[in-house]
Amino acid sequence: MLNYSEINQMLNQDDDTAAHLDSLYTAAINSYEGLSRLSVILIKDDQASNYFVRDRLAAECNDELFIKKVNQAGSIPKMIKSKSARVVDDLAELTSNPRNLFLLNQGHRSSFSYPLTFKGKAIAMVFFNASELGFFAQHSIQKDMLFLSTVIHSLMVRQFENKQFVDISLAVALNMGHAKDPETKGHLHRMERYSSKLAYLLSKEKGVTHEFIRRIEAYAAFHDIGKYKIPDNILFSNAIFTPEEREVMNQHCTHGVDIINDVLGYFPSNRRYVEEYRFLINIILHHHEHFDGNGYPMGLKAEAIPLEARIVMVADVFDALLSKRLYKPAWHIDDVIAYMTEHSGTMFDPDCIQALISNLTYFIDIYETYADE
Image (cartoon, rainbow, N blue to C red; front, side, top):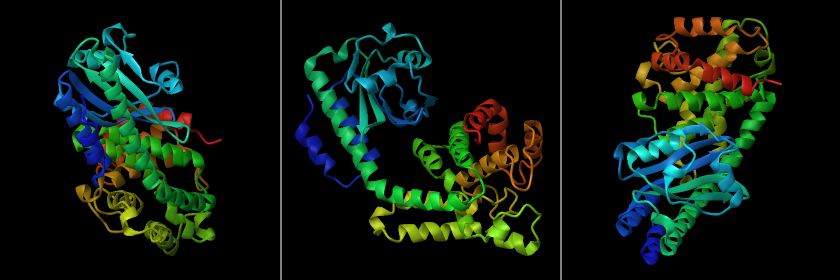
């Protein structure tokens, strides 16, 4: 049985959410030898993605990245709608799908799952697995798993609430910038999805984490926020820029950093989330750096360019070429790929281009799903 008092004391420590989840997992497996896995799956719009995984039977799965569309006829929407726990005594009796087969192949035999909500919306799912059939059938074990799920819910809600005011302020800044930006709202949605998909595809090669994917999806749309400070006669021009106009336009990267600093300046330093801030600034400041060092504003080269900026650059150019703009018609997909291939290793990170081209159908699907109206 769990030591509730010890767990409650642990939560009073000023650790981040992942550290708390690690401690909860350790407490759980120390109390129950049959427990084999804990995972927290984030739910956003129509996507489910891993936030935290600890697997006693397969430690290599702790860094597993899992992103998929939520099947509205599947089990997750049903669990969310029920607002209650689900106990499965034998995973083999569930409808066969890749996820269940994956768990069974690792040696997991039963499960306990619980939906987490925040302000009436589903934000995550908690899954416990055990290596024994019928492990969660006992009422006392269900009670402990429900307690752990409630604690995890508190942690996730606390994280959401702590970031909420900062995120709202950033969202207001983004909306203000977008109100003047000639690019479409569809472009912003596509940037989120392109960037998170590229990050996912690069996960093994580049060591991308769940947190990296969450951040790049959250912040990719901010890449051009600095255009808010570009004069209208340049921003809305459909002519080729003069060298002087190009220099002014190129300043949108540093303008973007200034805007974010202005927003975050209203918050105490302990509420600015240093790692989140650095990630966001990297995207805004460096998404026009070229892989060969000939980009701007700092002329960074290759690996010196933050990975998040390299990914966002590829996503941004891909969408810009594929879309109609004030200064150009939409390009055919074959011409887009030819251009990006030609500039692989000069403008673009070759690994990003390889991931894009090798999985082109995913990106075309994103473009069509979030097409401009």
